[in-house]
Length: 286
Image (tube, rainbow, N blue to C red; front, side, top):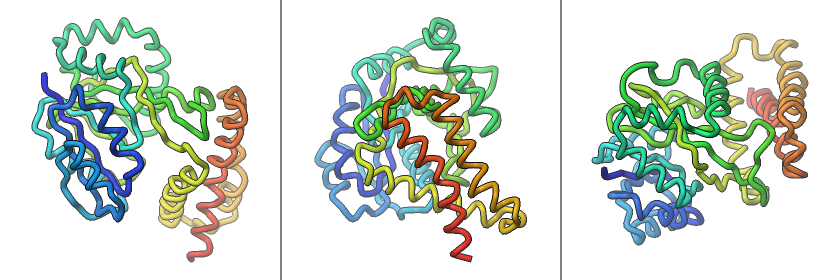
């Protein structure tokens, strides 16, 4: 079974070659939709065998992800971000799963060693995003657990792992609604899990972390502006005190972020700070 690998990119010259290198053995085609990068992303991608299409760099990045999905020609599509790396074990598992019958895929799901952990994580995603896929029909998509690299360490606690993301999908059976940066890809059919981790070189440096975090903070600020009575005393207290306190306790204490050494502390602290930062941005813009 042939596989298409698709990506949406913007200024990823430091990542794109390493990402492509990890999928060359399994990809029949590599499709990239680039949002008018100002660096050498497009040149490097083309030099490494990718077909590149240029689009605007939309505020909602999923618009270009959806475009990339639509350009793939093979039945199975692996959708990646440029800072993700497919390990050899994961590549082998992907090839194995796409060549199974649906009955074999069902048996494979039951045999997963981390099945209980994966299903608990999926339940949390359903509570946040609503129903994911269907309970009947064929397996048309698969979550892949991610290991997130943060300041020299792959985080395993703090509620970060397994960080399941739907990455392997059947053509025409999944799409991005393109309404929000946080939205879940929508799937027609059942959604399963793969067992091997996808490596996510999320924040190798603190500068990189702040760059990525800034985008989400501004999006939260935009969402705050749409809320009812965003300048009320209750909203001020919620965003400046309650939300960051709760989030820090949740990630660092309840989910044992402290076991990820000092990186766990930094991650919990600054991820909690996104709420007051977003609120202050909203307040002063108004």
